[in-house]
Amino acid sequence: MEKANGYLIKDINLNLVRQAMKQIGTGSKSQLAALTKLSVVTINSLVKELVQLGELSEDETVPSNGGRPALTYRYNYGFSLALVIHMNEKQGADVVVVTVINLGDEIIEREEYGIPLFNLERFYELIEQYLSKHPTIKVIGIGIPGQSVNGEIKVSSHDQLKGVRLSEVIQEQFGLPVVLENDVNAAISGYCSRTEKDDNQCVLGVYFPRSYPPGMGIYLNGSVVKGKDGMAGEIKFLPVEVDWNNPVKTEMFIEAACTIIHTVNVVLAPDEIVIYQSLMDEETWGSAWELYRTQHAMPSMPSIILLDSFHEDFEAGMRWLTLKQLEPDIWGN
Image (cartoon, rainbow, N blue to C red; front, side, top):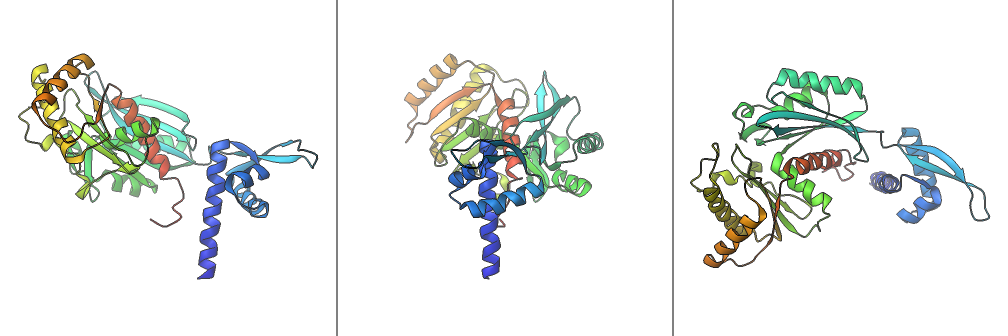
């Protein structure tokens, strides 16, 4: 038992050094000791191990205050790479965006391909191409307009994705862990990450695409709320009489949007609701929502933000979620 505890403490300390080096990029052992509150003796051992692994490298010797010159170390952000793939929509056509990023979330390579995500043969070819080119890729993140249950995509605005066990077949094919995430969940994660939301805030992301039904992501306590079978946020099933698969007139869209925002606000009482859409301007929405509020009582009122940056937040969220998979799971969760 004591031996097991010793290994656990070592892993925790190793991760402290790893996270500190990711933040500062380069640093000396004394700097790491100050940042992590670990002893210099412990730092010596941990730094040696990280250098042997290739995660750190010796950088340069710098003068110290009256003592021996200190050796600095540089963090190797390319020690592990992540392959992130997500579906985008451009001018009414589906586009698959492939991005390779390092541990510092720096983009190494990014390309767009005019192929549908459900063309698995072409999809496998793309993954194989990038894995061959970047052998230090250690995780694959895939963002989809849908939700999987026990590995099978059950709900999606793209019928061709339904029934596909995407994460399983890719993991079996390439032997790497796969992060499969819903597009709206990823987008609200990306938004909260870039705006540095407090973990205790509840933030909702409601997405109204032009040609597909809406969806919602719920961000609470620093992570996405999934619900049973990951089905939290499937607002297209709300009893709102709108045919989302065809162009919606502005008046009907505003009425439906107000009803949906009213409903989720009453149920979840969020601090903030981000509405991703490109069907109306802020002035039109502001007037319509203000009128709606005078006619319908609500127990609390969130901040409501209109954005047209869904795809940017979707991509940023997928990168963030995929990189989290590369963080050591010290507690075995």
